[in-house]
Amino acid sequence: MRVVLNLKYLYSMAILWGAIFYIFSCDKPATFPIGQILTPQGEMLFTLYEETPIHKESFLKLAEEGYWDTLTFNRVIEGFVIQGGCPDTPEGFGDSPYLLQPEFVDTIKHIYGALGAGRDGNPEKLSAGCQLYIVHDKDGIPRLDGNYMIFGQMLKGFEVLDAIAGVETDSLDQPLVDVPMEVKVIQLSRKEIDKLRTK
Image (cartoon, rainbow, N blue to C red; front, side):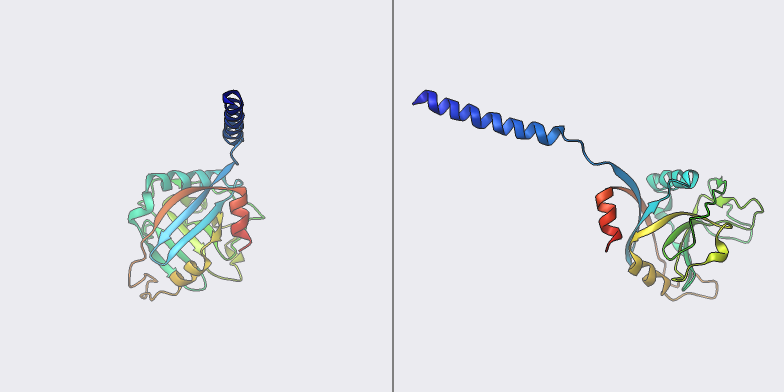
């Protein structure tokens, strides 16, 4: 009787360890960096284009450093864009840690929810690393294509975008009540990204 019980025990343990080995030996699904912007109005998530690697890496670097976490959306124009980061002054973006070479791609457009990099009027069309904006025009803004850099697209949070775009502003388009931002990077699998796209 004892032998039978021991065999059953060993058989059960073999199944258990086999299951554990199978679970931990399976490859985890690949993940992709997703831009996350947290505001009092809610969360926005963005995919980042592989076709614009300079701007993508700059965004990831500054987000990981917490660069934007003490800054706000300081220019809000409903039906156009919401813009945030370092101050946009008549002298340009003097507080930007660096400027970025343009990476214009014909197929990447200023559509509703597009994530872009601000710039001043410099003739080289260099982007300010410190500035970002999100397109709020639901018809898109084609006149900006090839002039200002888009490097991402909203996955989630269109209602948040609308809420921020609707806040009350002064004559300089600055919100009367600050709209602070926290910019982070999270990792999502392809399945998780596709699920957000279908919502």
